Image 1 (cartoon, rainbow, N blue to C red):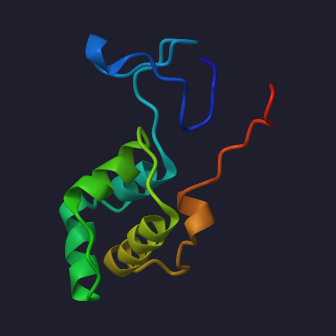
Image 2: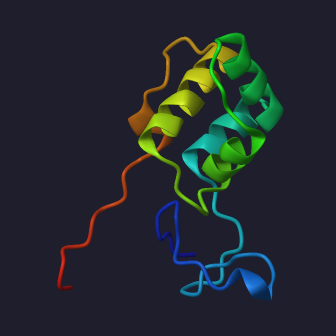
Amino acid sequence: MQNHGWRPHLASFSKGPPNCYLCGMTEIKTPLQTILDDYKLTNHDLVAAALAEGKQLSHKTVQKARTGSRGIGRSLQFRVVDALNAAANPEKPWKREDVFPEEPKTPKGV
């Protein structure tokens, strides 16, 4: 099975669950999804951890970040990572770059 990165080229959402039109994969795990599964955390756990720190974070934002189907802004990425570090309490705190890797930018005109 081919690996097209954690955010594949997705087909239309109107035809059912998203899948990669290159290889047919239907489930792509983002780094955030992998971390949340490993620590058995839910979206609500992150929202509650953010609220305990006095920051606003919605379930909708966490879901967007979790699936990777729609990008979220840099400031929201920092909020999600702060809430993740507060909820999971890892030995080594995660950085934004670990949870939200940058996609390579395509040069203009290509």
